[in-house]
Length: 411
Image (cartoon, rainbow, N blue to C red; front, side):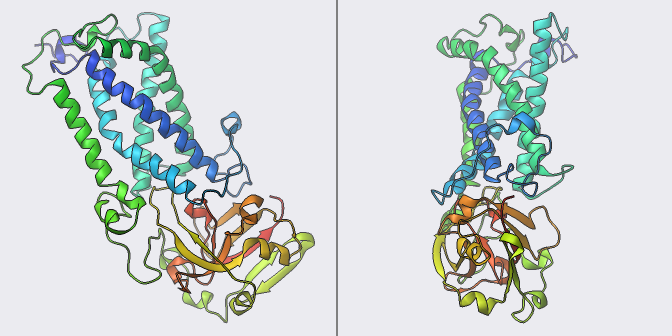
């Protein structure tokens, strides 16, 4: 028996073959394309071109060509796109692992390069495998709130996505025609260019190829059933046992819906949010500034909005009833009759999103509020008391809690 992985006879599984790997490849072709598009959409939702405040990716250059002002309609837009992005990414993990297993003999094939074209193909394969493992691993770690990677998740995942998708696209251009031919010839296991996937000395089969695909599909369905529920409320959320924000709702009452960070975790003390201590500073045109205590905010015109919260980790809530002062009314207080961009600063002293910027179109939306109440009661400390921002279709981290200062103007 050969002991070197570079020998074709070393790999004896009878499951490996062009049809098996082609089926997995077609699934990944569709799934990863959707992942890439929804990932770019998620990045655009953070408005990285708005100001250095939200821009977590330096020197992105041409990679930011597609960025645009994120819309506020429909209000559930980010809830949908990010829920699809994260859930689909988790569901595709068994397919990705099976695909890598099916082609592993090629990774050890010798010589490393038989020609320049073959060398380029091997290089793209290295970037494809490395990039895929990096993107899926960092994505899962972020979903699980395990920040084990060096630096910020946003630039790492952004740059990694472009490297991975470029290699994926090159590989798809080279291999998709062959994969489609393999699927049309179900019984032909040695078409041109793919015979090295078939073992010359296969072991006895214990499961059919279709059975193996069933196992992979079953694993994906199991992951779907145990993660997708965090994008919903009620009984479905309790099925998301593999997600940090799955399981029963956190507490009861008007404030009994999901959060990421508690007031204690953010270092917010009750003394600085007490009515006698807290003031909101609003600054606008020509340095005009006002300081408002919570009772003064309550004397302004109050409005209500039914809006969800959706986070980059893929979890979301259904609509909550928020009540507070419209952002565009606060802009008008300091001389901006036409809504302008705004920089929102929190009492929170640490963390990447203790400051967040919103575009003028988000400020202009009548549903965008500096919320003081939720579901008919005062905000709880964990939901941002004494005041928080809530904007339709915005990622959760841009709905700043424990707001201390708002600066309106071009950013």
